[in-house]
Image (tube, rainbow, N blue to C red; front, top):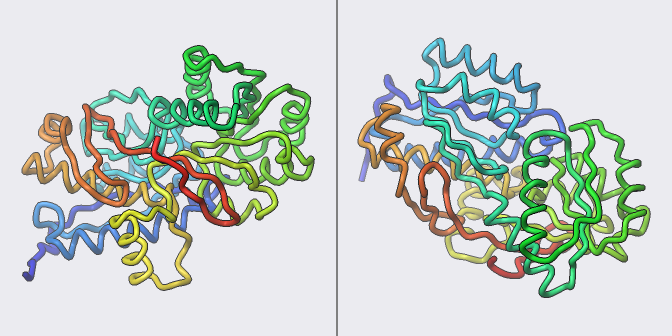
Length: 355
């Protein structure tokens, strides 16, 4: 079947992805998968018959800078929707810019609880990602005493508050908590605090290169020999940058891994390589979330029958689609999806179990 798209009336998406800062190392992967998503949507008729295009906004800049750039795009009528992977402090800066104006499909894992109209969250939340992983690591590896390390902003802070509740529910002990400045904290001091603690594992709430630096210093002190690490945010670029010796006994929970062997996940890898070639930026869970964001926008617009924000808000509950993560279904503004636990195996992940 041949689809005829309206090229004079495109569906323009601002993809807010990190091109600098600690998360900048997986920005190219996010951009590459956004190209695949737009290509596939357009091959299938676009969104509401309109050709899908996207414009990159650097989500690695300071939140107020990102908000200013996006505000200019919205004010100029150049944006019909917003999506992409970026940290929660950026989301909070963008929310007032898009409120009541354009739909916002936020794709990153985050601390949960977003309820502002027009923001549709397709990422993992602590209750469905961190809690079952801690339960599995307790039951199968005996990890009961945890030290929490994180960057000092909203996602790690709010997630740590959730971890304290999970510890009470699961009969775990929090041996300590420590936070460092995003993109420039005292990682040596953080390692010293971990080394002095009596713990079985470290729960890492560190972003991008901050996690890489922590992994390197952690292994250099030999700590990977006596305690495990668990992170809800670790992907293939970060494994590569950390180095094989620095990722031993490192566990990760996510809704998608490149190494998953489901038919839909394998098919995504095949289509990604077909479009970009074997030397494309590494496909990973952060980048794949950007693919999810485009699918959310398409599915939501299809269900609503138009792109008007009040109708999209009314239509979001119950939106469902199948893709690389399996079935994703929205309950209110938050997606529910399968989450898997994997262990780092050199520069890739071995998926252990579905949580």
